[in-house]
Image 1: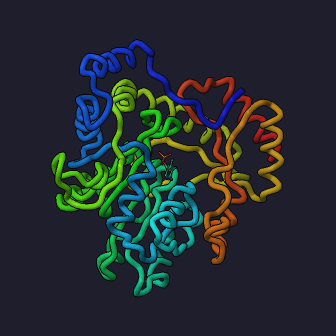
Image 2 (image 1 turned 120 degrees about the vertical axis):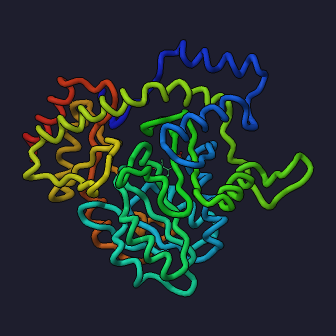
Length: 357
Ligand SMILES: *Cc1c(COP(=O)(O)O)cnc(C)c1O
């Protein structure tokens, strides 16, 4: 069986070695030695000034929206994982969708201004499949209308844009270290803010608002990563270059062997060092997609319709029509992409697709 992804597991001895430290310290959470070390190593690796690792990739979205969204209208993309929209609604903010660019698949920055109202507080956009949004234009709009920018960078681990970490743009960035993501801690995530004051607010917000054991800076929630999660992260991180290069091989294979005259692939923004996080293909019609999906499934190959449905059509957001996002969502599927996918498996996937376009 070939699934859309397969989690990367380091040799178990390496994980045992990290876990042993937690046992020796008798310390499982509350920002122990392993969490602090993981933060230091990620900071160096990603070349960012600040990072707070978290229990998952959704809590940082909620914290960011609590701090910057302030129950207002949030301009957002309908083409993302449901967590992006759900976090907005969960924080009592109102999602205002703006359609996506048909090739980049990120929010269409040229349509943002017309969606702004007096109630708009922030823009929450996703660097979808690790492809950066048009961060320069979004920055200009935010400055003009005095809005905050949150990037859901769950897919964007290791991506650089114009030579800088993608986590450097916007006010707050969030990332996911879920088991299926490129770098992972089982469950986990991170948040980033360059502004020291905002960084401070993120920090206390993820630890119940604590200032000291008995005093509080303000309202907070529990978003802490455990030592057990950090142990996984510290065991996976040494393999990160291998993870990138193995994924690149798969992407290169698809690029040179799929019949791209009949399929659309994502257009990565210029000046981006991409992370090979997903390989979406877009069919000419939904029927075409369903036909190929069935044939692949019959051969024990399970790509995933990702992202489907368009988020403006789910039960609690239904209303607006987003023609491009809806059209893409109905025709897009992500192909298997992971470390260890063999050439013979790739050959099988590609020949089944090409023969049935
Ligand atoms: C995975 C993902 C999340 C949520 O991350 P979790 O770590 O699973 O909570 C949020 N947004 C996007 C776009 C994602 O793909």
